[in-house]
Image (cartoon, rainbow, N blue to C red):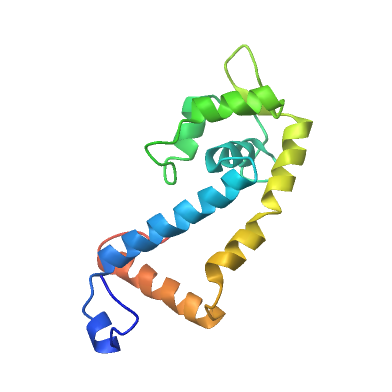
Length: 155
């Protein structure tokens, strides 16, 4: 939609929805590709995070796949198959499944979660390369105001 020679005046009339969509797809695709190169998927990592009492889980209690889908509803994509992701984690011994069909993170799963999380700063650094922190904060504030302007809720 634009080239490097687009003026600020021209950019000022570009549709925000287009650029937020392009940015979302590009950042998500990049992040998922980086994780795949490291041997895991974003949904697998999210499962571990949601099951860990040291991360997102408030109590470390096991959860069923439908409960996990509900917990992750704001960031799951339609193509994300949590049952398949859980299957891989079960094979790796990173989670177990009890008689009530609840998944529980194992000690080795917790170790894996910590190890996988260590890659996040490098992925973030690549995404933020060449972007001043103040500019990034300004961009987020602008997006948050657009959300409020259109009746959305900023968490």
